[in-house]
Length: 142
Image (tube, rainbow, N blue to C red; front, top):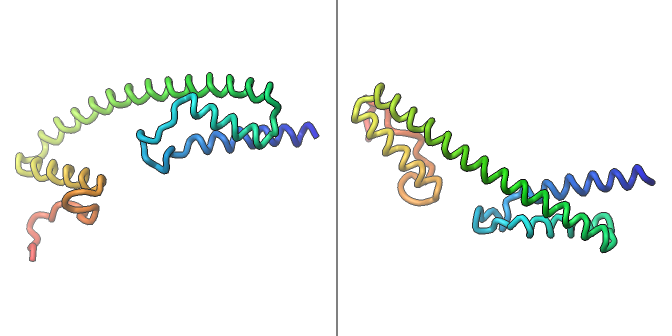
């Protein structure tokens, strides 16, 4: 019986973790992002239903989940800021290296293609993801 209960606890934690890792709000991104408090409440409710917890345990689990989600969000925020900073440096280095290799016209053409790809990923503007890249030099454009 203890083994079954332990398995249920492990399964519920796994399921709750997977559910929380899913995009919130039907994949709306930041607009549908839950606060740490909302995540903790949602996870606690799921665990309570699955494990049929009494109110005392439910409240204790809620406190644990709140601490966890608050810490997890803080870590994610720090990581995102660090990653943005590092990626900016890497992108600037890439741009400088490309400018050394490509002619001015090739560089402009590459930047135009990158802008079109960004627009296509957003579902707007020319290309809409159909264009694979600039036409290779020397080929006829019928």
